[in-house]
Image 1 (cartoon, rainbow, N blue to C red):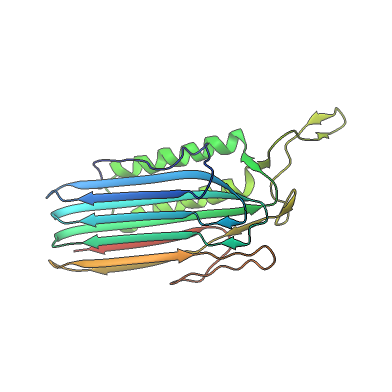
Image 2: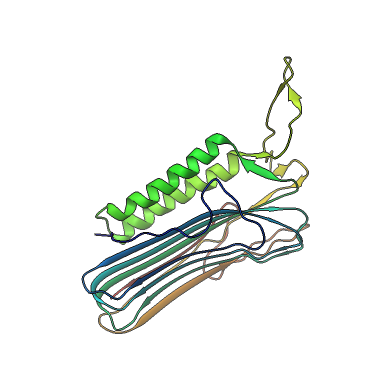
Length: 253
């Protein structure tokens, strides 16, 4: 059973931070026959010429007949004309002198670059809060790591959908409609946001390893590099798309 403790690092789903955010889920298990589950879920805003947000999931096990899980999901809303964009998304699973231990780490980073400040709609905030709730519910379920990864992937897709459809420009909105009612402008329209271009990047990566009673380490890192004139995305282990950043590591011993 994937259970035991759960902590959350970073900002609440509806909040945001400034500067260069770091979101991390670190699960450490040194108790035989136990399970540890850690989640970090955050939304952060960055403004300026440099974006170096980091997202990390680390699962460490040194025990017998134990399970260790770390899941990190980070949404970064970058505003302005950034010229250096080097976010880091990393998952590490580490077994040390561990027997019959299962270790899992998964990290996802959603980076949206816009020319104007944006925020989530009330519906978007509710949807993100629901994703957080569903993530916490996973720790109570008796499921395999394969199913856990499937469920986490599905929740990440919900996050990506919220980022794509539930962002609006910040500040007063111009009137719309014959009655002159104010309306929020969508943050994206055919790949563009009010005030400048909008780019959402994705860097999925995955790896797995297994060992019987020895020490084993698996780590994957997804790095995204985007310029204001020619956005591009690179990853160390998998092809890239244009929606989300994910990194997954599973270790069984």
